[in-house]
Image (tube, rainbow, N blue to C red; front, side):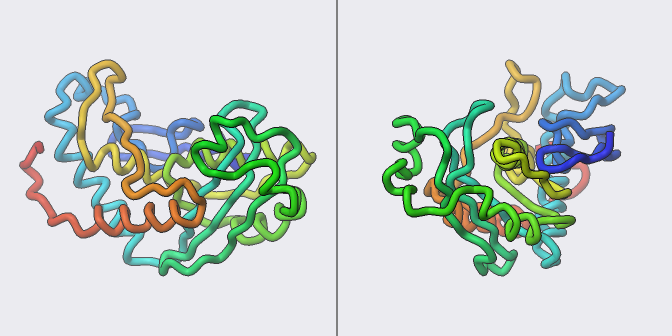
Length: 230
């Protein structure tokens, strides 16, 4: 399946098989189908997955050809809109940060999380006026988010409200990497448990910095011998 814009993910091969759906971004080894049925033996996965997560973080830390992105939104559903977006360079420099005036309301539940009300956003530009510079910045780039599937979908559906095309982006998900790094198995999900972003402040730029700190933390983890399963 070829990528077709924000929120679409290119299939690829990993040690664990093929991934590529919207919920299976570039880092998702435990989602892949494994012919040996290792998913039934989570203790075997733990060490392998942690090493893969560390290697992913080390690769990012040794380059600067990627960006961090985070959004704040009016909700999580199909009608939700992006009302704040930030993009950071791996050095921590802010490349883009803006609020967007939504077409719809900002529900109290969302406002309670990020503190952005409709009244506060009234002076902000509408999303369609931010879309072009944001698209030029992101187009063709590798972009890391904490929950990339969510941010990609919200950017795509907000652009679609205004009839705008979305750029081609290569998404990486730090949330999925962190789940494998932690290695807490969920028998109910049959996968590693997802965790909240450590240090999250529910502001787009602040959460980008928290994601960068998390990547650096995973990269600094001491290498483990191949035979360790924990």
